[in-house]
Image (cartoon, rainbow, N blue to C red; front, side):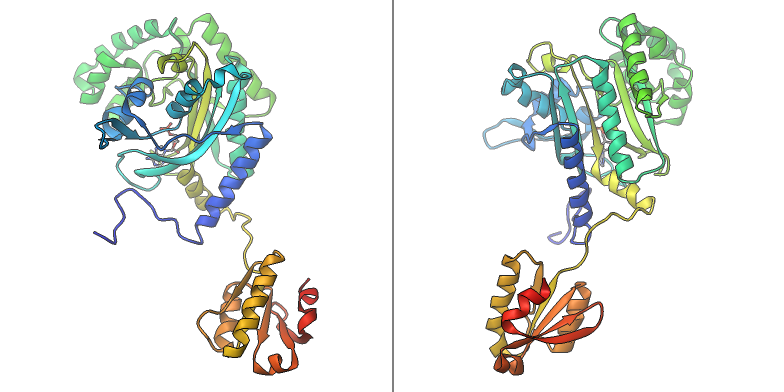
Length: 417
Ligand code: AMP
């Protein structure tokens, strides 16, 4: 027990963490390029926030939240997604009073009591963004384009963008009625969850993973057939902006997304290669009612989130080598006690000059130290023993060429340069 991590969590060890750092670096660079600013919100929030925003009938809220009472009897929840917290912070910190739209991004851990499997964890990480304060379809298209841009910069090939509209307060009630009428004909065949959805949240009937329900859903009326003029025009514009920058997409009328807060645009980026159910690496959409739902003014928003684990998994599956720099500049090898202090000093000086530098801490033999230097892909080794100390020199070894030279101590830095 003591040496087992909780189910659904991961340790990211050296060797793998570098991939995370590379990915995070690229994400930050690209968000800067699109002029998004980072926001960091708490890992836990009042439970009420998620009930109000994500929605009580969503899988996340009804089954997957890590909720608890703290010592002050407050109901808090480890955030299952990032949007609610960002919107809360936007309202609480009156970011709406600054220039709009606010273009915000985040990277960080999320928590869901999910069934762990490849690509699905209980602690996972998302990158995401929220654009608050514009209902313009260029925003929808920009957010989708960002996601596509990020994945193509990573070298991912087999991705598809699926897009749909889930309508608005105007047209959705009519659509929900149509869905109810349609699915009611198949009550005896629907799964228990869908029977509940039929009453509480008919839109989610389109989202069921059960084969029987999926088959029925595939012939259901579509949102596009019921979209009002505004929603239809918005959708068409988003599509035309995507086309203008060469983003390929497929209209998928069954795409409704698992969270209740979406209005109009809903989209996902799916990788065609990953196992069938976990193939969405990114999802998002427009949420024009969310800010007011959590107590702010009537301010529209649009955003997406992508799972970092799934992105990295896909990178691996596609056999993509990330350009992660390997190796150190210098390995400093002391031989014998007397050389230790000089080597300690030299290592420090090299590091101060900006060289990545490693040394020996275990009084190893020269052979063992050269092995370590090789393992660390050192470009140079500097070897100092009693003889070198006596002559005030160091042996500098070019590891790639397996050649070495004796260099006066005061010229070692110049030599390395
Ligand atoms: P969602 O917030 O459910 O729309 O999810 C957005 C993205 O987060 C998904 O496309 C996945 O890439 C990722 N994701 C969601 N849930 C999990 C999970 N339990 N484990 C790993 N990644 C997840």
